[in-house]
Image (tube, rainbow, N blue to C red; front, side, top):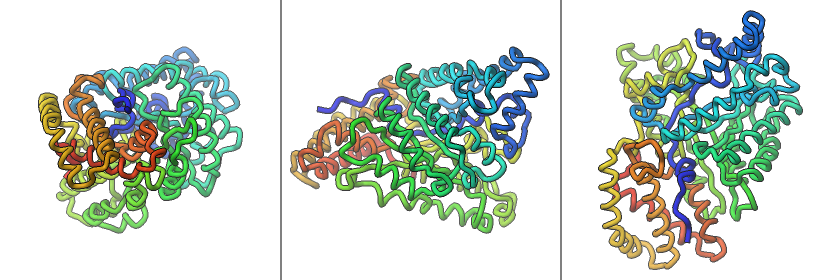
Length: 495
């Protein structure tokens, strides 16, 4: 008999509705003045640190940078994210220097500049703990490989024709290993996963080789911890790689892999389209994903996609095609279409920025888009707590009748029934996690299993379904159990 989902399971496998924090832990306070994002690589950070050290000395510089990190998310910010934006997760980008002087050795930050970051990681850990007590999970996004961000910052990071040196890839691997060790040995339950990002693509550098090396280490340290990988500007390639790594039966100690992809509509052919045309094409934006999902037991693998960055921005040439007075309504339609697509097709999404440092308007700003109603909160996160509890009671009362109906329609198989029972129970546990205080924060709303494919993969292993030869029947029952619970509690995807 499988154990019920733990609080850690809820944090990691629920639908992740969130935002990127922005560059608070990648850049110091100098970016607050509105510096251009095009000049915001690690080399620019180093330049500003050295300038501050020269003018004010180490102690004052360190205190200034630490004040910047300590105010990354205030109590008011967290309250707004929880109660207004209904975010249950945030994605926090970090660099190698975020981890402190040890990880600056051998880089241009070595020496006095590195000492500025002596307490940075501890400050971030306290923030992660603070987020946890608000019921907000954190995806730690390690994205600055020494040497690579500097080159990528001069152009489009997703297509930068640059590959870091072997030594820098080794340092990046050490950084990720350290982060996973910290998450593990300090029991950082609020960490929903660790992302390993690269500023290059599958062709420019051998991403497969680097991912292989990193995943061997993370799997040894903390096998259940989800690892998010960048799609390297090639989603099909990354999905195929993740499916290979997520295969069943699971090798001893293997981290589940989720593919992060970014969705922007400001370049290329989109510049020659009007906003309505772009919005209409969103329904096909993840066409590579559905054929790879829905049959975990038959395919003996699973895969999930996560939208690590998106915005409501469109190119000026796109907006020039419509009357300016129509822009607010068209932006809202664009944002709603994205919300629907991400909430129905992926395991989570993070708007490009909360506290972003940009000069090109509110289309990149999470707070602005929430205020204007351009982004739609997942409906299950807005249900009042009393209604959640009432819906749970109704579902429990109707459970046997729903089960009998499912068995009569699909199969009288014992394996289908066992799958249905667990699927119903798991979906109920997720839905009631907030109202029953299994997740801290005194939230309204219910939770939905967002990474359903990987959760089914986990449950197949937990219940040893592959050994009996009836895994497909069991999985069909499990999916129907989840669906029936959702129907009974009124939890539906965005309409």
